[in-house]
Amino acid sequence: MTRLASSPVAPALDRTLVWFRSDLRLTDNPALAAALSAKEALFVFIDETNDGLRPRGGASRWWLHHALESLGRSLAERGQKLLFLKGDSRQIIPELAERCGAGRVVWNRRYGQPERDMDASIKAALKAGGIAVESFNGALLYEPMEIRSKAGGPMRVFTPFWRACRTLREPDQPVAAPERLPAPAATVPLDMLTLDDLALLPTKPDWAGGLRASWQPGEAGAAAKLADFLAGPLRNYGENRNRPDFVSTSRLSPHLAFGEISPRQIWHATEAARMAGQAAGNAEDIDKFFSELGWREFSHHLLFHFPTLPKANYQPKFDSFPWQEDPAGLAAWQRGQTGYPIVDAGMRELWQTGFMHNRVRMIVASFLIKHLMIDWRLGESWFWDTLCDADPANNAASWQWVAGSGADAAPYFRIFNPVTQGEKFDPDGVYIRKFVPELARLPDKFIHKPWEAPHPIRQAAGIVLGQTYPKPVVQHEHARQRALAAFQSLSGEPL
Figure 1 (tube, rainbow, N blue to C red):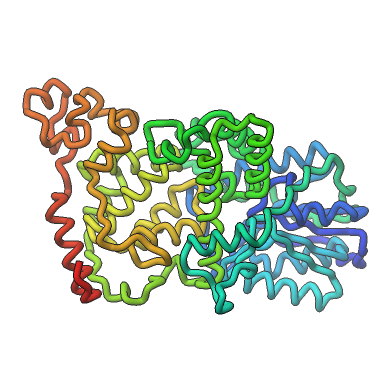
Figure 2 (cartoon, helix red, strand yellow):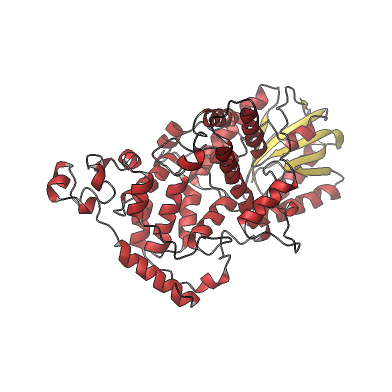
């Protein structure tokens, strides 16, 4: 817990405390923009240890370090400093505001129930102390409370939800990054931490080499990713986005998760490029890309209205599903050693880079849930720890979608065949050869099913099943029938 030194200072209405959370950027940051009229300002980030908040996973903590480092440099270029604290924000924010004499505190909203409860508590404490407080939408195109069904409740199906969003209004225009910031506050508590004091980076061992080679965290990295996407992969996005062997997606999700870019920036930059004839894609590609932003919005809508989404089945009938206890199967899945090349490539991409192609995420999630019949929450937890873009709304909603237990979910009996999925979306085995190099010398005909390759071909490729590459941990057709029987016994529904 951080100790705040020095005595309280009389609050000044022209001194503002800006609390950065999941909005680590200067451009289109409403809380930051609200502080620009102040004479003095303090900028703080808290590594929160509040009860009820889910601790960040390892990959997220690595990204967070570099995002904060980038934000700190941007503030320094404008004569300001990013302050670091660690502990319970319900205690730190009111005390910090009092110690530095802030007359106002501003932040951008988060939408999980623990965060909302925490913010309400902090707002009440600040107001009781005579300190003004304001919060803003910095993360979404449309806030969850804005979109309602005809009956006045939350939306539960994506298509009408997104239609309601699109008919509500165009997303607001983003606000440019400020060239100047208010002066630093004259009084700053003495016991500030450094970024290194937060101990966000892995050290023993340092497993982040693949992440460093794959990503440029920070606002500049986000802008570069968007520009590259609009100039190239947006072309044929509607078709190619399912191909992990192509550079076919924006890879903006980690930058969005940490607020290094806002969805408003993405939306309007895409529209501007289209209007100027500089976007690589056509109208259908752009609409499909926007609908992916829509799924992010829908996930946050669900989390807001159904706050147990990361922990409990959205559809209660799945509460009695006969999940299997299979530590060996879970470990094989986590290590990318299932014997199914497309599944193993995805899990190894995740471990090496902190990311996984979206189509492959669906394949590996389906495999864990339906081939191994392992509880989706164990997969969600693994992704939470290993994904750079781990997000409490997207992660939980997506896992429940695949499991069939979520809102507007894929039916449980939609069971991906990992062989045919690989053949369809990685037809030349490019993705598999990149992340499962022990299979690289197999002909395309067998790259997705090495167990069917004749012995001389496997021998020429240097493959000994069960030694250099595992045999399948489960047979597809057997696993499929087992999963279907389990669901039928649960639902009583004919399949």
